[in-house]
Length: 346
Figure 1: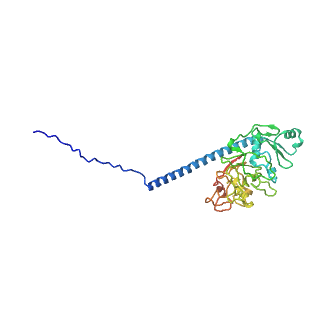
Figure 2: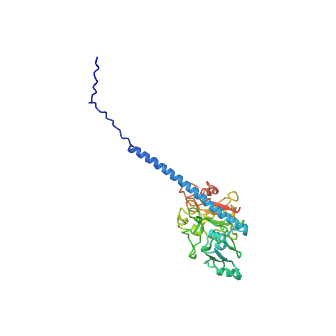
Figure 3: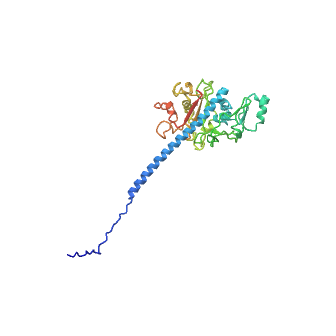
């Protein structure tokens, strides 16, 4: 039996493979974009918080460095730094020096000062006259010359040259724009101690350990004077952030300037030790005890010293008087502001 060859048909129908093109629908694309936008937003918020935390840390370091210099100065001279006594500054109708600038000069140098009676001491008078600094008007009794190019060479105290007590980082030391300077202030601008947002840091030193905590009560000198803060707190656009500090012209301004009735109490709550003395709004400035011999204050991330729209309560709610709401403990309320305070000197 003969096997016949099998014939394969050449007329096969070729198989056709159709590939389905895959892709996102419009709805799917919108969902993906929305998720990415949310993630980016969360990332930006997290980065903002990290940057703010880093700025707070750097600001505290600057303030602690300044505080250490103040403590070292006090150990050597028995007082805290300030070329011109605060009562003298407070007596000037247009005070040209902030308390911070006043302290920086005595910590870092670049000045000569002529105290009452020293004009009759030839060696001191001749040294003052020979100094090439710019005269800052302080009335007829005290005289001050400053050479900004020599700040950092060390202070000249009791007729002797000293090494500088403070050498701040270059980012923490510089001129502050927008200060509300008095009409009698000359063209000389003095550098300030700066926080990490480019705003000036307030320095207040205690003059005495007894008496009313703040604000002049007739025949009783207060523990603290605020001579020289108007340049900061009355500014319509202070520092790199350009913030309006004056509550009288900006509702979101500083509660330290809102009115004669409130600001003296607000200062007292900022300065007082919460466990010592009465916290009654009507007694707080008269009977409270200071938390330290000096205080340093940074306005914090918002750039406004104790802004009326910062602190306790819902965001945006104005709080102008720390002792004005019986439901809010004013001592705890102070800690709710983003301002940074460092006390020193016990």
